[in-house]
Length: 389
Image (tube, rainbow, N blue to C red):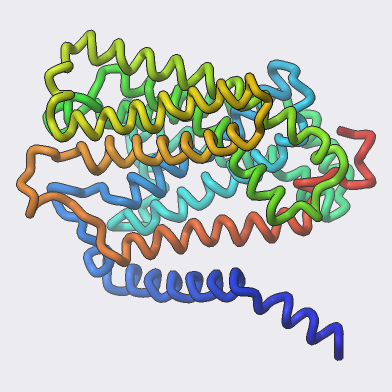
């Protein structure tokens, strides 16, 4: 009886109760969405066909899931084996991120059952959306295979697991190529709207900006996720993960400082090339400067300072700052600076149900990650496979 009571007390925590409320509420909103149509839960219209589900769930979700290709490339392509403990958590987060991006797209599409149409029925192979859809579908498959050894070890399927592990290098190369393609193509989608996107954010180099910033997102998310995991799942980590944690923070922090500095430079050069300096004196210009100095230059400085002083707290603060900067940039490109010439009453603002569904999707990602991390060898090495890593 005491064990049963302890289990109940363990389940009835404030976090679990809040999670349950969000999941139930999300299921109700999902029912409304798929029974009454997209108009019942969103403020989307013909002027604003893409809203917060694209800006946050897709653009931010894909960028913040970049930790998978960044970490696996660092470990398996560049030979930085000291980051090996970060690979499985990063791959797990990336797999869940991409999987739930696809789930989120079913809410955004007017005809959700037509999600596979661009791949299997459309002949528009020159379309950027076709390329994005094809790459995301393929990369999600690659991520699933990369993640599967953790599940196979948990299930005790040694033979299948050993076969999959032999393809690690090939999968890593394939994943990096696919990520390069679709991360940049998401930025290229906005090249067809030069009159709709504000000149400070519009650029012919948008594909390059999206790809480089995805590297920042991947590096920062690995640090940020590691911080959260050490707080909430510290008891699941083995000695290897705990010993390598500092190297991951310092190494990824150093890389993020260089990439952010380069990103800041090429964004500044782009303004100079297009001679857009006069826009900086406007309201949108002030907001652009907030993004550039508060969420690009500042985290770059904090990363560099943290690495120089070997201060992991500063690096972790920088990772939060950088992640918020990525979210801010994707929101600016897709929502804030998009259709900037429309009157205020015609501008898009998300319906509360759109925000609720986005919170529901993020909560599902966290819930599934907790389930996986507390059961499968993600934050620790399975005792039967220690010699195989």
